[in-house]
Image (cartoon, rainbow, N blue to C red):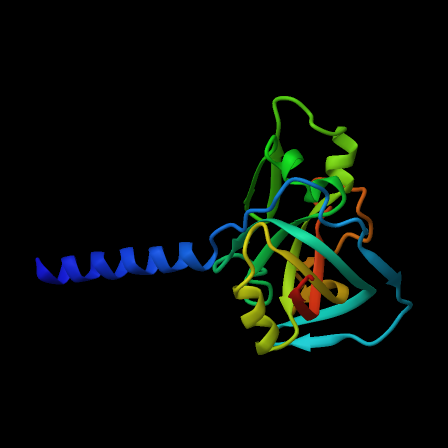
Length: 197
């Protein structure tokens, strides 16, 4: 009986620590990020190998944005290389007065939003937010990604990449912010990330 109590206490402690580490950052109303993500398409270039995965850089990518939500994965096809997804917002999708009227969640590598009354036009919600599969370039970036909190303003840069596994499984990145649904997510090889100032 005592063993189960100890296990229960450890699990509760771990859950509380995890919640505290990723507790949301609260921001005052107003647009926090004026700019939009920037990218520059690359021609045929080198590929990178990460274990059983091959990465093909498609474009350079840099952005400042507000973290709308984060989801960590351990058991799906991409988790060995991209353990975290960040739903990112910019423009009016970085404004708390807008976001307070939109419900946001993530599941199964998708980002979902719902609203009863549109605070801004639908196309602006879709064009000013995106789900991004984050591939850390090294252990330092992996540690930085683990510390990212919803509501935080972050700046990162790297490459949009297509991913292929040894067995033929593949996942292609989006190259535009105007798409939605399956195939509309960015796969980002993150080479630098920090809190935006």
